[in-house]
Length: 340
Picture 1 (cartoon, rainbow, N blue to C red):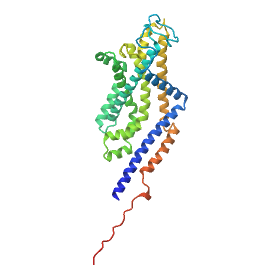
Picture 2 (tube, helix red, strand yellow):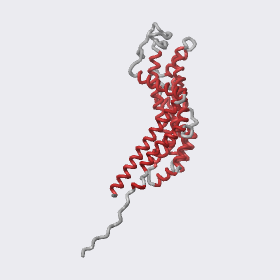
Picture 3 (cartoon, rainbow, N blue to C red):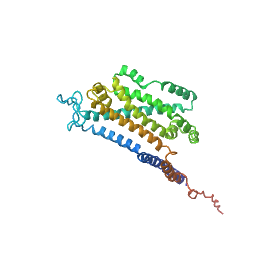
Picture 4 (cartoon, one colour):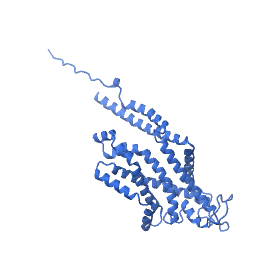
């Protein structure tokens, strides 16, 4: 019976974990449906999906070669052959913007990853039980967050020259500090909650408490902040490349297209219009996505998410809690037989 009881407990725990995964998956689908239900959210999802699709298509196909130039059609207007015209070297503007979309997407993904790692490390130090470590980290974050991202990029550009790594490190560090500061109150509430204290009392490691209890509670705030930082990363790429410390020359990017054509804005304004319009649409879409995500991920503001969490949590609780009728009743000891 002991073996059967242990098997039942393991089975209930496994069912509880599967229920938790269903809860997270159901909550994610509910959040996406809530974002799509609003016009601003639909615009954001359509623009961002088109951006990702064009970035992957550009790996396989572009209307013209990036390095093909036409000296007879310099600064040409849009036509059937060149959909958005040509630049000062006769290269196709549309092909360069397609190729630049994957560079900007790579910069955004790497920046979000670096800022998330830095933010999580700082949050772990801020909510640490060691008072000295927590206090020093809070003071350091408040001091470093005042340094502009452009200044960090200028410092990094001295030993590294102009490169994508300069943008990623500078933006990732700046946005990671901001992420830690914004998510700190929510992380502190989760770290001081009853279930986190119970986990520590049960001997759970600090890393597992952080991953299982603190990060999931701070994840909605972190997701919104990271989505807003993505839009800022697109702007930072354009600005730093224009200053000459971002994407190196010869690598297609939206900022590079702006930097090379802005000096001819009075003569050929269309070459500046197209990359500027794309950057504007993408940044607006990322900001609208962040706003929609903040509303959709809040159970108080989103009744659909609250209903989904309650509906998904009911079978999970039923799987974890054993009914009274299924509990094993121990048999009383039988008296020993005495031989005559």
